[in-house]
Amino acid sequence: MSNILIINGTQPYEFAPGRLNASFAENARSALSRQGHSIRLTNIAEGYDIEAEVDAHVWADVVIMQFPVNWMGTPWVFKKYMDDVYTAGMDGRLSFGDGRKPNAQKANYGMGGTLKNTRYMLSVTFNAPKEAFDDPSEPFFAGGSVDDLLRPVHLNAKFLGMQQLPTFAAFDVVKNLNIESDFKRFDAHLTAVFDEAHHVPA
Image 1 (cartoon, rainbow, N blue to C red):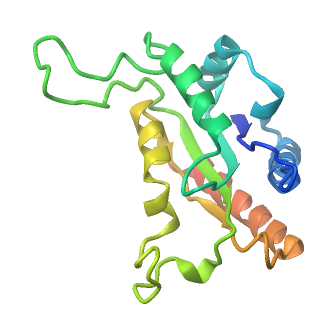
Image 2: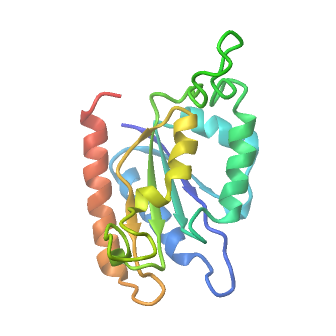
């Protein structure tokens, strides 16, 4: 069984209090706990201890990042969390600086991560419909995928040495929310991903 850190990166607003992402995070905690995994859940908007979060990343075999995509990226509280926690961990716990060495100062930027046996999964919610992605005829994303859009988040994880698991996305959650279908897909995604995680060598 695995140690799993779930990070709920939602910033609640009056018009969007964050219940959906909190529910996804709680769903993951419940489902994975039933499978026998050890779970830690951080709700960023409720506050966090930087050192405890660094320790939680070191402890975790898998990190699940749950957040709504706000203005094409993470909510500001989640970006602040990364600034706080990841920077504190650059002392060798999460990475050895930026990966460059004194005798090769132009090489291997971003390759100093220490979490090489840790996997991560993005679970995100969108106002955008699924049809906006992966379709070159749609002018905004112009054929780009969800993972293309979230490349900075993937690169942050790569900076720490983490290995990517398949991303989950719930679409059109403002205008055409389908909670029952989305949670069924999420449960199936968790089952498939964690079955894969147990059978593929780290």
